[in-house]
Amino acid sequence: AEYMSRIKKEASANGYVETVFGRRLWLPEINAKGPRRAGAERAAINAPMQGTSADLIKMAMVAVQDWLEKEKLASRLVMQVHDELVLDVPRAEQDLVSQALPGLMCDVASLAVPLVAETGVGNNWEEAH
Image (cartoon, rainbow, N blue to C red; front, top):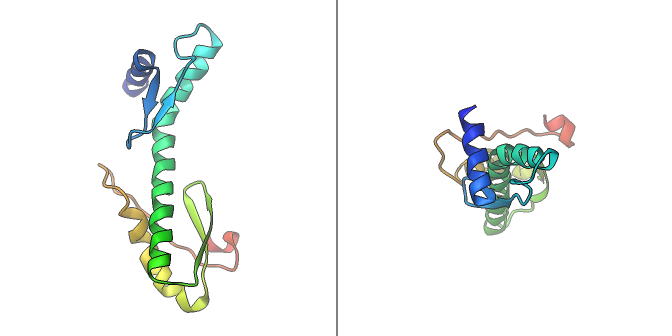
C-alpha cells in the first residue's frame, strides 16, 4: 500500500515513472479525471517492476549475444519469451552454453535481491521446461 501510494504521487508530480535503470514511462493521463486517471495510476504502479524486468532481459540478451560472438559458437539466440531466452544450441555446445548462460544473465546487474537464472534443454521450448 505504501509503494502504491508513493508511486502514484511521484507519477502525478513528475508525469512519469522510471525503471530501476532510469528508463521512463510517460503517463500523460496521470492527472486526468475519472477512468483515464485510474488507468494511468495502474500503469504507474506496474511499470517500474515490469519495465525493470524488461530492461534486465534485454541486457541479458545483449550479454549472451556478445558472448556467443566472442566465443565464435554455432549456438544462436532465437527469441525471448517474457523472462526467458530461447537458443538453438548444437549438442556439442550444450554443456558449455548451459553452464555459461546463468552467470551471463545474472551478472548484467547488481540489485538488492539476487538474480537467478536456470537452463533447460529439450528438442523444443516445451521440452526445455
